[in-house]
Length: 113
Image (cartoon, rainbow, N blue to C red):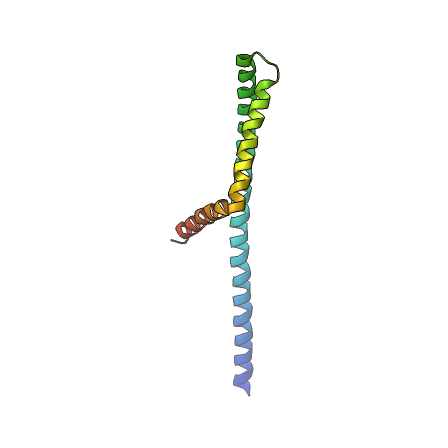
C-alpha cells in the first residue's frame, strides 16, 4: 500500500512537471510568433509609407509633365486600381492563396531544420 502511494505521488509530480514544460514551450512558441508578427507589422508600415510618398512624388511629376494639377494623381490612382483588380482576380482563382501557402510552407520547412 505504501508503494502505491509513492507511485501515485511520483506520477502526479511527473504530470505536473510535463504540464509546466508544455506551458513554457507554448509560451516560448507564442512569443516568437508574436515578435515575428510585430516585426512584419513594422516593416509593413514603413513599406506603406515609402509607397505613399513615392506615389505622391510620381503623381506630382506626372502633373508637371502633363501640365495639370490633378491628372497625375488620377493616373497613379488608376494604376493602383488596376493592381487591386489583379489581386481580386488572383484571389478569385485561388492562385494568390496557393502562392502564399507555398511561401509559408517553404519558410516553415527551413525553420525546422
